[in-house]
Length: 201
Image: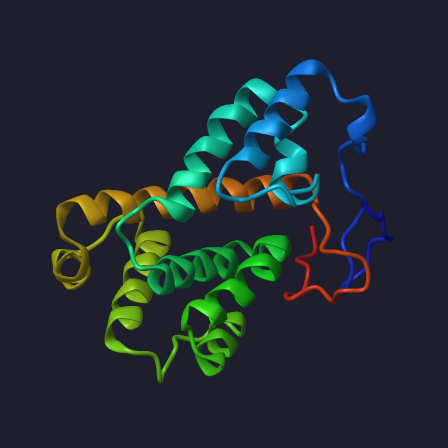
């Protein structure tokens, strides 16, 4: 991973050592093989949160299994799951999460105008009603650390009891990923712009 100087348009240096597949420990190699054997496929590399997870493979094994289920195994339609992930990424200003999931969300049916609104931190004015309901749910949860009965009911109508549990899980997992990316300053691929202005600290 490229390490860049700190300024308002670039991330400070990545905080973990870069890993080389040729020198992974047995536990790291086993984790990498497990991730590649799952729904993410053989092309998975050591970028993003997975490169971070490799530094603590016992934790990474559990985290990546939960992540695979949250992304590929829930009853939430991919369009709404990816929409919820984008809302989470924007709230955390998680550059890599946005970089990866914005194209996936677009492919799943989230419109370019909605993605642009989310990236700018705006409520998506022209989004369909189900996306607006999910947006209200996620943003209220972050703002108030609770969700009102009215907001809950709008989304429950879409997903039912099991889906509500899964939605909470998707939000929790991708908040974990966002925190991981932000704490360790995981960069986007070389040559790609940061989607958000990096906060000054």
